Length: 228
Image (cartoon, rainbow, N blue to C red):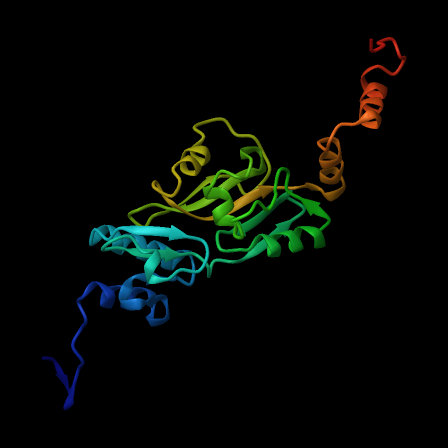
């Protein structure tokens, strides 16, 4: 055992929980290593790298987790600490991390007078990560994603600005992987004016006599078509 000026250095913990604790910090490794709660995307990358090196099976969640959520012999990786949301009206894009709640995202969008087309709050999806993982966010609402590959490499697919690009649709590939190809740590969302979103929701509402008249005034302003 190494000594320095009469002080005996503590032994290095080479167990998997010890390795995770050294890389992620003591607050991020819980329940004997069954629950991992990284503080940021860099820590997520470290967790995935270690998991691959030690063949540790991980289950991802964007919300809180307990040891009972972990797979047999593995751990659950919670992204709940990744909760940042930002809105860039100039680029027409909002960025939301996987652990951000939909309530926080909605509040940020409302404060900016913006909305995300197709964004809703279905039951069981309190966090952005869950919404994306379950395919409950339309592809047209996404301009890009930030993800961490199993080996710990961080990648950006798509763009932080609103534009169309030609090439492989890596964003859809990673989204369709359901967390098996990469851990999605943040998404970039297309913005529209809040008024436009309200108008679209109204048009998509239940049809009725007045709704038919409204549509007729658009498609048949001269009243040429008469219903039988």
